[in-house]
Amino acid sequence: MDPKIFKAYDIRGTYPDTINEQVAEQVGRAFVMYLGAKEIAVGRDMRVSGPGLWQAVVKGITEQGCNVVDIGMVGTDQYYHACATLKLPGMMVTASHNPAQYNGFKMVREMPFLLSGTDGIPEVRDLAMKGEFPKADRVGTIRKVDLADSFTEKVLSLINVSAIKPLKVVIDTGNGMVGPAIQRLMAKIPQVTVIPMYFDPDGTFPNHGGDPLKEENRRELQARVVSEGADLGFAFDGDGDRFFCIDDKGRFIPGDFMTALLAEEMLLKYPGSPIVYDCRASWCVKDLVTAAGGKPLMNRVGHAFIKTRLRDENACFGGEVSGHYYFKDFHGADSGMVPALKVLEMVSRRGKKMAELLSALEHKYFITGEINFTVKDQKAALAAIKAKYTSDNTYEMDGYSVEYPDWHMNVRSSNTEPLLRLNLEALSKELMEQRRDEVTAIIKSFE
Image (cartoon, rainbow, N blue to C red; front, side, top):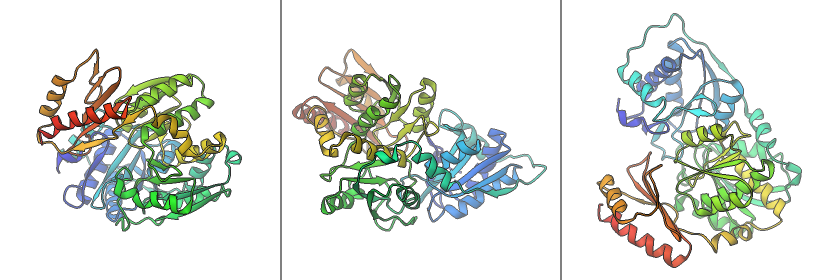
């Protein structure tokens, strides 16, 4: 077993070399041993390797004496809903947005807390790799539960459906897990005209990749929004826990701008509430949250860490640049479909096109978006940046962040890929480009 499959947020690797049925069974046994669980909810996404890995992980769980609740082929937010509703720990067979050859496991201790690289995953890793499991005195049972309707009702309960005005939306689910669920959902909002793209789950990803953060995976959607004269475009990643929005001009909306807009909406319901955002984000998040009477709280990147902070601070909402949006009202978890509905509600309530809502942000906050570099010596590159850029406001919450009066940046190593990631913002386009090029030159000198 390759220890590198045990990541900061989940277990993930390529099938069948690092993730396979033998690994799945060992992970299932280790998860039971670590939790001391009596029953575990187990779901999977649409990946081709999913059925075999699901069977193997269930074999490990049941042979270790623990019962299984089979929640079927579901999106990750429906899996979270199942764990919360059934009040059970859970195992989801998924590799999120990764390419077709990947698979893995997302593990819930109890909602909204997932196992992470600092809490639970190292223990499961050690148990799985050691492979010494006491023989159970019984084999666990398997029962099926279908929570599709319950999930639809839960998500719809978080908005005012009657307040949504007639809108036209192009929705691209990229052959991931959101297609069937969004069809059930949108049937309850008949005033919205849906133009579907790739709603059929298909683990081979026949049309484009499962990560809409990559421009090539959303290019067709952006063009379609313009050609259809649509009000909005929605995209979701492979397992459906991330949401991405295209405005009426066919432009991609950065995750920090979307976090700021959604935070304003959530503060209407929860005045004065804390709002959690990640350390890569534009200054627009803290500025808009503060102006709306909320309490902006910066946090390290990653769903396991954001969910914990959301619960600890009793925050109503959290957002990440990567397209994860977390809601107190949705079990304290992230969902792709909840922010999609919130956007429909927001555009309807404000009576403006999405491009109009973005205009004020685009003319004040100039962001690079996340720029990724493959670097041989990440530590040396980070050290060079620290030596060059320092101020009275630096912090190492996640990687290295430095703030000046008119610009700031975060440079961090990816937790899921062998990359160094740069996010930079300035209060003018010219300064943003100047600083971006400076920092890029330093990082590239270590490639």
